[in-house]
Every structure is written in C-alpha cells, then in structure tokens.
Amino acid sequence: MARYESLLDACGGTPLVGLPRLSPTVPEGAPPVRLWAKLEDRNPTGSIKDRAALFMVRAAEEGGRLRPGDTILEPTSGNTGISLAMVAKLRGYRLVCVMPENVSTERVQLLRMYGAEIIFSPAAGGSNQAVATAKQISAEHPDWVMLYQYGNEANARAHYETTGPELLHDLPTITHFVAGLGTTGTLMGTGRYLREKVDGIQIVAAEPRYGELVYGLRNIDEGYVPELYDATVLNRRFSVGTRDAVLRTRQLVDVEGIFAGFSTGAILHAALAVAHEAVRDGRAADVAFVVCDGGWKYLSTGAYGGTLADAEDALEGQLWA
Amino acid sequence: MAIEVRIPTILRSYTGGAKVVEGAGDTLGDLLTDLDSRHAGLKGRLVTEAGALHRFVNVYVNDEDVRFLGALDAKLNDGDSVTILPAVAGGAFGFAAAAAISQHRAAAAAISQHRAATVAARDAAVAAR
Image (tube, rainbow over all chains, first blue to last red; front, side, top):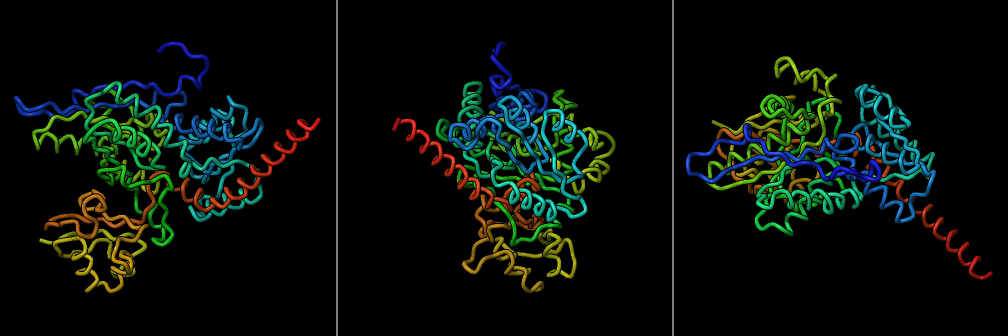
C-alpha cells in the first residue's frame, strides 16, 4: 500500500470513499442507498487516464510496435496527453500532442512540464482545421506510433484488469457503476468485469452535453462512435448538460470536500439520478462512481464561482469533459 | 401540453431556424412522424431507410439516451423533453482528429510488419552462423 518501486507502479489502487452527506436520505426502515466515490485523481498524474496510458504503452511494447526512442503521436488536449507524457518520459519515448491552440494554459504548461512537444492547430479553423492538421502530421510521419485510445483494446483492458477488481474488492455489495463516456474505455472494461461477477449490476454512462458551439461544427453524417464502444455493456446512458455538471461539481466540494473537474460533476448527476430512483423503489443500492480528476486544471475557467448562469457562459464552446 | 424537442444547429434548416419545436406522439417514432408533417425532411435525417435511428444521431428523452429505452419505440408523455444531438461524446477534438487520421494505423502496421520482418531476417542470419 505504501511503497512502490517507481511512479508507474503506483498507478491505480485508488481509494473508494463514501459520501454520507450527499447520499439520499431514505425513509425510516427502508433499505440504505449509498454513494461511493472512486478517487481517480489520486493516480500519478492526477487522472484516471494514467491507467489507460500505462496499459496502452505496455501493450505496444509487448507487441513490438514501440521500441526505445520511438515517437508517440496523440491528438489530445486532455488528461490522456498528460498521462502519456509521464509514461513516455519514464519509458524513454518522445511524445507529440496535436491540439487546438485555444485549450487552457494549464494544460499546455502541464504537458510541456512532463516533456511533451505540442503542435497547435489554429483555433479559428475549429475542429475541421484541427483534424486537417492532425492528418497532415500523420502523413508526414508514418513512423510515429499512434496509440489511438478510442480503438485501443488495452484502454478498456486497463479497467477490466484494475478498476473493476478494485471496485468489487472494496464494495462487494455494489449495485451500480457510473462513469463518464468519452473513449468509452472505463465503462467498457469496468462494466464487462462487473457484469461477469455481479448479478444484476447496472452499468450507467454519463456523457457531457456541451454548449451549442461545440455541436454547431458537426455534421450528422460525419459523426463518430469510438471503436471500443459496445452498447450491450451499458444499461443506461445519460446526457448531462453544462449547468447540471457545474452544479454537481460545486456540490461535491461544498458538501463532501471533494474538489473535482466538471466531468465528475456530470457523472455525479447521473449517480444521484439512479440513487434517487432506488430510494423511490425502496431498493437497497450501493452506487459507485468515478472521480476522473481534480479541479485544478479547470480553475482558470472561473466556473467554480459566481452564478450557475455565469459558469455556463464561461464553459460555452469548451470541451469541459 | 406537448413534447418539447431541441433541434441541433445542423438541422435547423428544417425548422426555419427554430431551436426548439413542439410535437406530439406516444412513441419517439410517432413524434418524429408528427414533426416531419410540419418540418418535411427532418425525419429522413434521423431515421435510416431500414427504420432505425441513424448511427451518428443521439436522441435523449429527459436526458436519457433512447437507445436504452426502446429506441423509436420509446414511450413518451406530455411534458417530456426530447433532445437531438450529433454523436460527438467526450473529448470531441481528440476523437474527431483520431478518427480522421486512423488511416495512419495502416501505415504504422506496415512499418511494424517491416520491422518484424527485419528482425526475423536478422535472427535467421544469426542462426545461420
């Protein structure tokens, strides 16, 4: 528990903590309904993505795709880039991240600090320009290795082999698992494991519903569903808007003292929905949900203070999860 | 009472620019047929010829994905709120870019095959000595 050979060995094994104040109150004599938070911000770089990054790099090494000194290319502005930068540094690879130039300054600083190189795509061109830039770079450097987290089985396997067993060990009475839906790796891996071990387990997805500016760029015929996604692993899927995500993020720190990013707020919103349903139906429930990361990287959005409307405006057009 | 339907920017050409429209129906399928009678062509963008929801369209009833509620057969009630969105879940930039350059993987696979062949040839040469 307390001593590890290296930082990479300290990945996972995160605490599961009860939320006695945020769990819904049940009528006297009714079965308990409890919320449990899996603190993934306690991973080496502060997010759940450390698990996937480590497994993807190891799988690529074992499969002979990555050799010492190779360059890894990842189009990401988020936590995966930060996790990969740390793993790449410790395992001896170069990491190049492609991202739009309008991402938050903390992210750029963090990535550079961990040693990643960044190629910016112009913000003005929106995501179309970002995609064009990423395409051009990949064409110029076919020898760079792209781990492609959206289709990499090692991403889901990280959670099948670690997150799932940890949850079951710490909470054998688990009835619901709630996590965010991005690459879908957390839900696919943890969900498959828990479905094999726990009868009647409910696997619940919370996906962020961004401001209109984000979707405005999208054409319905050019949509994308990650290759890892298998809808049969899920029981339900909630779409959580910016306002609800911010509200829950603030509630989590205000009531339980857990300072998390906004994707966690979206997940908590869905977790509370299923918890309240269990209370209504008079069923016992142990609802475990994922705290993806801490709130530090999002402070500059200003969305932790002021009115909810202000926060919603501050996050409009941003990929906050 | 009616059902409120939120239309994504990309489909507002069918609703005269309206962000929110109202409709009626006992199921999602009925609602879309009702909407199509006033906003011709809208249903065709959401439902395939085979009669299923288009793969890259997500529809939510009161914030829950209808694919887990019976899809086009999902039951609706007056006062429900329906949201239509293109499929761009989490990390939108990352996966759009990753999807767009996924052909990179083909090139990468060729390179790692080449490497494996080189290693095999070297090993064979070593073994022959």
